[in-house]
Amino acid sequence: VNIEPRRGAWVAPLTMETVDEAYTMRRWAETKAVDLSVPHLTNADLSQARDLVDSLESAEDAQDAERFVRANAEFHRILRVRCPWPKLANLVDTLWNGFPPLTPKFVADQMARDRVEHRLLLDAARERNAKEAARLMEAHIDRSWESARAHFSALGWPGSSSEDRSSPEEP
Image (cartoon, rainbow, N blue to C red; front, side):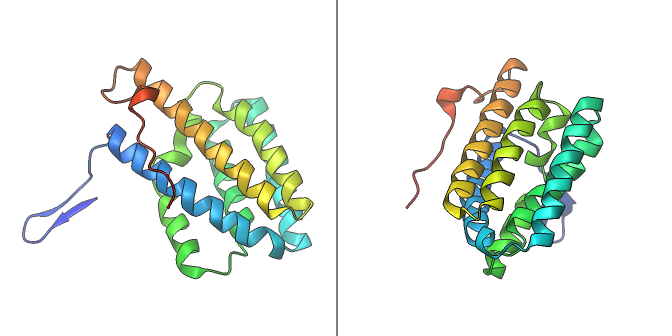
């Protein structure tokens, strides 16, 4: 949303630049939040995460994208729920309010690929392997980003080819 004093507010257009920005920021922030959170996850958190993966799989089997998107968002939230850095947690929450979580609604086979990746993420979290969970999260976000770009490229969006992807190196 763009807000301009004395002129009003309007929804900003979705462009490849805004998609790239959202995925880049989410890649950095969510990966770090998961890394910091996993060692502190409770058994109840992990049980809830397992139930959510089961729900994701059931939604994928039924091709119920709405249910999948809700369970997916909650699964990701559970993996980062114990992040001890509140500003980082708030940033990730903000990044989840927008385009990236909706990709299973319009990217072919997104739910099937997510299904496998979420099982691996759950396994790493259950083993309390924060570094592996963070590595898997980074790969998961990157793969989703590439899938979104391929979708937009097929629609003819300018700047959507993988060669055009701008991913600044981490500091």
